[in-house]
Amino acid sequence: MNKSIRLLLSLAFVFFTANKVSGAAVILMDSIPANKPWKLSQQQFLLQYGKDDTSRAIINYYFEQQHNRGQKKILVNTLITVTSITVFAIITSNGTPGAIIVGAPFIITGLIFGIFAFRSAINMIYFSRKKLYRVLKKYFEAKKIPDSLRKDIYRENV
Image (tube, rainbow, N blue to C red; front, side):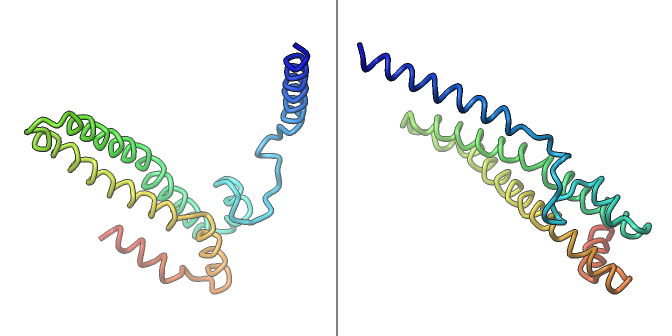
């Protein structure tokens, strides 16, 4: 009985201490200054680096590419991939003779959407905020759009 009371008291102490510490650590994300320049939001990028129309267009292009091509599609593609492979595993686990034939469309669908999810992840990495910061830095140094960005935009519009 003595051990159980000590255990309950120590658990209560840990719970209340952790609760007070976590309550004190809540800080709004907008109030934290960014230590690294590429950790800024789109609005902060526009305010800090959107000095002319071209730089604002570059910032909007990067955030639009990251959002539309990456964040929107990666979740859906990953969900379809996991679901398809899970359905294939359930169908083939029974061991019936035609299970692989019935499950083949599911595994093919899973592989195709897995490739799409991988491409979306690569796209999110390619259009990262850190790369945007580097592109803006090159733009402000040379006052011309970097060749890599011009090639990306040209490839997309052709």
